[in-house]
Image (cartoon, rainbow, N blue to C red; front, side, top):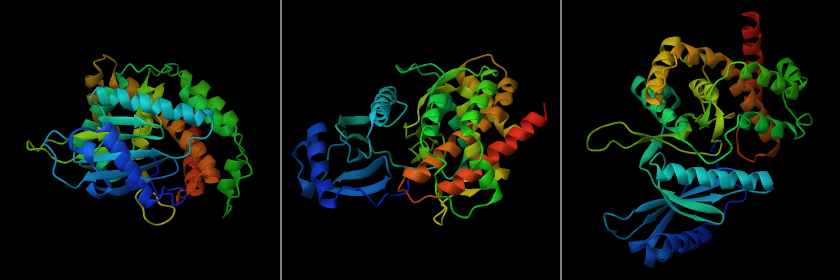
Length: 358
């Protein structure tokens, strides 16, 4: 679940961005970029939140066909603490490896505090497009490309549990919730640490393979490239902040859950939910058939299908806890509290349903 609403606090000043972009592009890029001044470029802020600010830097003068006319400049935001610094380093390594293997934007340079990336003429998908049959199969292919990777980071199945445990170490009981209701009281009276322990025990029994996962494959992190001369559809996955080795079932189930959420709502709480959009068994089967074919394994689609509802639990609990923590720390304009209630309420309802059906 990514949030890209602009954070108005702490953003580098406009003139400073021109000077920084000029210095970095001149230092890391070749050809026409080597001689640029602040008068030779435009700098446009595309998006950014608490963790990143992203700018499109455009060369005004003509350049050679082999040179990029546009690049992205990503500036890291808050990186305080050992965990935040470690995550930034890991994400840079992952970005570099995916870039080299043609699975993500090209990397033009890494500098202290950020990086220069390929600018891709594309747009992020709309939530309703996730169910488009053609696009869904392309997403399945992209997911399998990631899951087949061998990335030099910790390959144990600890990321999901360690991340939630780290979040739960923060004080969440003192959150100043507004508009109290019975559902909220129930959630906040629950021991979420106990829930995480129960879920770990429950999911471990499924023996879902641990693979390299994106872990946040929602509409905003899937780019639809502009059609080339052949008219073929092409997708690119972005935002590797949550990439890690994790259960296959989580990546798949989390993506299916994202069919039901739309984060482009301009009105508070800046998301909408339509549970009827959750993929049908037929839609899930088509997605998983293509996924399995690309993975080249002989595992039955039915086996993966059986993992989905159980890992939907993990998706709800994970992002519910994430939202509680961010309601205390983030300056991004987003309905974190409402979203936490939404995800955790969904978790408890689904848990009750799964247990009662046993």
